[in-house]
Length: 117
Image (cartoon, rainbow, N blue to C red; front, side, top):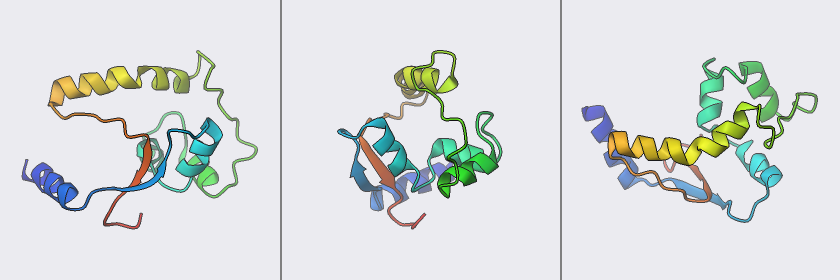
């Protein structure tokens, strides 16, 4: 429990850096910005816990070697990306209800304010 409090105190002292406003980016521009860092889905893939992306695929994406990888269609209703995007607000609302932590949509790519990675 004290770890959670320590993290919360640290984050209040050192807020995340807003790298770029994403409000007016199209999907390809947004994906290009995401390629420059490690997000939540990337972190799961990096440690082998993402059932939809391997560690090799992640490395290929982050190093620009992914030209021959299949690119999912975000409008394909049979693909998990479609459902993840559609259900994101519902998952956020459920998380808020269960934890009392507010989820905010910032329309920005954020990076840790005190670690370069």
